[in-house]
Length: 164
Length: 135
Image (cartoon, rainbow over all chains, first blue to last red; front, side, top):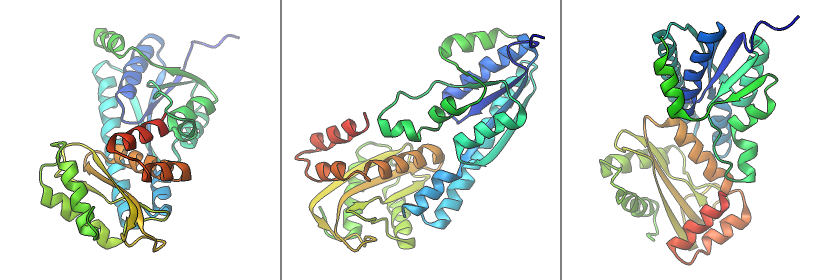
């Protein structure tokens, strides 16, 4: 038996970039067409904060302060994306978790049975080292479901605006 | 460069001021020095990363100082510091701020990078070394 459509459960990777807003707009358009459930996920990168403490760049109190800031930023991004969905009649479930970003996203795909991960454009690879540290790059490589990298922000915005 | 910690920081801050992104020099200086009071940002292997997150900055600013002979910055290994990365970021940019600090940490783990930057003959040469390392 064939699957019902290209995607039933969409997960949007939210990192606060303009690209993730474009990814959300595309996901909303896709959901309008297919009826797919949409979840937006933001991961507070506590692993990186911990690394900065180990490197002695941060002290513990600073780590806690930055963690709070990142959490507040994440909530703000998720609320914005939920509102984008609401404006077009698409309910977007939001989740904020803490951990290693790439692992948390890959685990969430598995946990919720997502069949499509939607994310913004990857940064141009700056160096070989970055390839091993760029979380979006790692997610793209490790995700067990199909991954859609959304490009052409101007076109997607027009597509989103045209939705009823 | 100045020879004491506050002098080094003030010299770098004055450089950062030229970007026009710092609204209140004294407030930023206080934030950086308050952070230094918690624990020196003088790390090992000649690196120092004084930094602050503050409402007194409109955007992220970094200034680099280089001392070939090395200066006392109360470093973790008690050795002179040669490379000073001053980073000032607005309170609203926690994510990019953390990413930049991590990138500095990664770049400075490389001995060849540290050595070449320490020996940079001019600001342009230092800029080129960093740009090349990021490619």
